[in-house]
Length: 267
Length: 313
Image 1 (cartoon, each protein chain N blue to C red):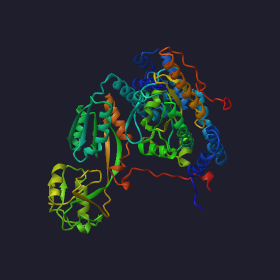
Image 2 (tube, rainbow over the protein chains, first blue to last red):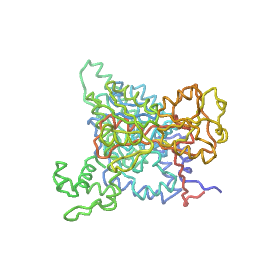
Image 3 (tube, rainbow over the protein chains, first blue to last red):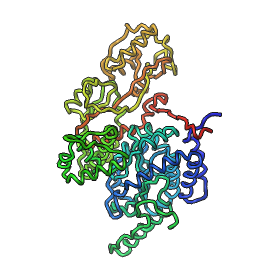
Image 4 (cartoon, rainbow over the protein chains, first blue to last red):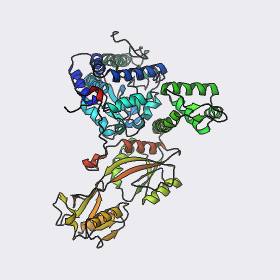
């Protein structure tokens, strides 16, 4: 029997999870559970890396709710330059950091974002995904998710580092990934083995962060319903402001604004 | 990792002295030390041996240095690009391109920059690889695109963009015009137009000679423009890289058994501050998908799929 790589085994799992009629959190958990079942060793390596990142508080100093989201100018998967400020002229932007097309969780996350894209569009908001991968692989993530949004190439993780979201995979995890068929160096066009924490920011038209989701455990992602609700609130506030002809109201704090390891039961 | 932690790390690496590094970064030494400790905790090991009189990089520190520097420079570049867009000044792009590399590679990227920033100015320099190296050394160009470059200068950074093969180009009136592929034997009686400006001209000639093709009856050509004119006039045939753009009237064919490949690389100067526009074009070139310019077989894909024995199916 031909030997199958771990990466290949997980492709089927990811596909099954994608078809599940369940919230994104459950679809992601199904993959995480399957990883633990297929290879307790690999799951152990993941747990150790996540614990190391949580202990060091990685991502905590990323832009907070109410702070300005740094502008970016990054090429999309087709090479077209995209600038955050230009997007904001049209409406709020959901900025979603991804590790890469090879990551089962990112695939499910991008697929989930594509599902809510029409809702967000109705609410006047746009989505951009950002990954450290070169165009060819950014295009693969986009096509896997059938995403109507761009997947921007942040080569060497420059923008992710500017936001304090970048981390080093480390030798143990790198070796486990390479052994499992996840050699990300050619996808990233460098040998740094640096990845962003898959954070999500909702940026208002004023350029300020309205909500953020940051979790060093890459197996968990921002809830899709929470993103839609947060964007819905921005939309409602904007409508109220337009109605009250310039009378401004303070932005409400968001359920998405939290640091790490949130419980999944609060929504 | 945080930007300031890496900035402090790089300062200590430069000065090998925590006090001087703190001065350089305008922070107190305890804050610098604390930040480095946090970085060490995240990376899972010490980066420095705190020895007197000078701090020394540990093995982990030495390994992490180029990686952290690369990401740090990318972040500084990302920040300065965004802020120069805001200020309306991205600077002048000064880029040197080897004679044997087609400018068409750069056009879509220049168009993108121009679309977002119509005040963009650029200075385009041409030359052989040696001259490209000189332009970079003297600072006349910030970036270079070339195939091979003498490594006599250790401050050259390079990033491979793509690897490609070579093809036969003939006039549409040529007897080989309608062939998808040819053999070395088909070239036996042909007059070759030799691209003297291509670093691979000599290697291609040697390969033909090895197949018993008489290339002594060849014409020497000094620029791509002349080459195209001569090809159009059907005065000879040429062997050019797949990425070279040719007018529609010229025809391409693969040459069976021609296994010579070249890698087009982007060059920059380490340690020199880059303009925002240079950082931008660098980022664009490095992330670009070059398949459209090369044959699919020439795509730089590393197909590494090792097997995880513990889950062997």
